[in-house]
Image 1 (tube, one colour):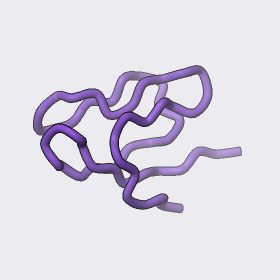
Image 2 (image 1 turned 45 degrees about the horizontal axis):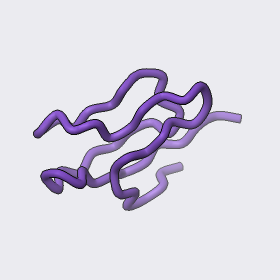
Image 3 (image 1 turned 45 degrees about the vertical axis):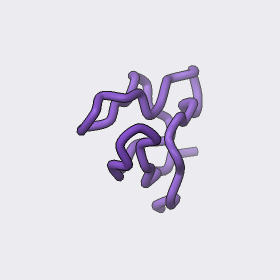
Length: 55
């Protein structure tokens, strides 16, 4: 089952960016370097606010 992309908002600076829900590496905010997602072996632990699920 393929993963989905998520539009998220950084809780630190409010930047919006698109990330993969099954990220295999730490995903950081492009603006402030806050961690948005951590890998867990399957779906990533999303630490940002999820705004939209993209198909």
